[in-house]
Image 1 (cartoon, each protein chain N blue to C red):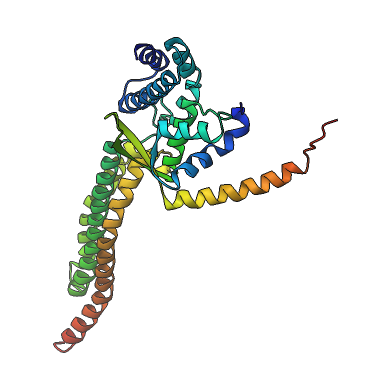
Image 2: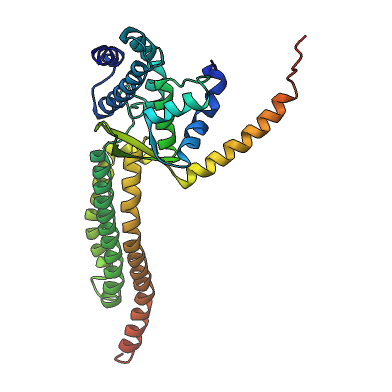
Amino acid sequence: MISSDVIRGYNDTIILFLLLEKDSYGYEISRSIRQITDEAYIIKETTLYSAFNRLEKNQYVRAYSGSETKGKPRTYYQITPAGRAYYSEKCEEWELTKNVINKFIRKDVP
Amino acid sequence: METITQYLETMFRTLPVNTETIRLKEELRANMEDRFDELKTQGKTENEAVGTVITEFGNIDELVRELNLTGEEQPIQDDTLSLETIRGFIAYKNKTGKLVALGVFMILLGVALLLTTSHYWDGTALEDACVLPLLVLLIPAVALFIYSGTLEEPYKDILKGKFTLPDGLRILLTQEYQKCRSHEAKYVISSICLFVASPIVLISVSVLMGEYY
């Protein structure tokens, strides 16, 4: 299980990734994260909603009311152009981070 | 699911009840119930499912921090302005602007009368009385200036720049300011025209009058 400290900077990126192709809502997003990571990352509810709030405040996503199959009204999120731009930036940032950290990682730990 | 609802009630009990917290609670509940159903269909017992759902809830403090749920839109500082105060300030500025303008007008009128009467009364017994119109008009003018000075009192801090403006009000005021700007241009242009016109009038009148003397 990934520690939330490590993943902290990338929660927004993960959510935006899931909104690239289509709009979605809370439960669907957390389920996708679980499935894609094979249960390696199970995002906490509070983390998820903090992220939604942050993304909305920064206008990277737009929230609107929609209804799910069970008829319960849900808040759906849609990525904005600014959100897409931010997502690209974060992807680049990750590539950079990955390359830097990899220089200090040894597969054969003594 | 009763347990989930109760869990949320407990988590939210120290927080204020407003539209934001109610909406958030609903969202979380809907999410948690969907997760609960998913776990049940995977064969978990109710206890196991509820346990997992609650574990996956996380830390309420994170939400409180991020969403600033303690009910304060921003730290309430003593010098945060209300719309009422702002409207009062704008009215004060309008009023003093007009009072001071009136006072200045009176002084200028007094000077104009002094010059006019000195032209006519020169060499007569009323020579020294030329100053009278100015002095007479000076009194109300000064009174106006002093009065507008007293109106300043409640807005001292704003005038010194010691205030905090809530974001919503800042946006509202910026919009209103934009609307005023077009009027501002008209006033400035007309006052400049008057400045230029007055010596022209003076010169043309004195040229005309010169013809009679």
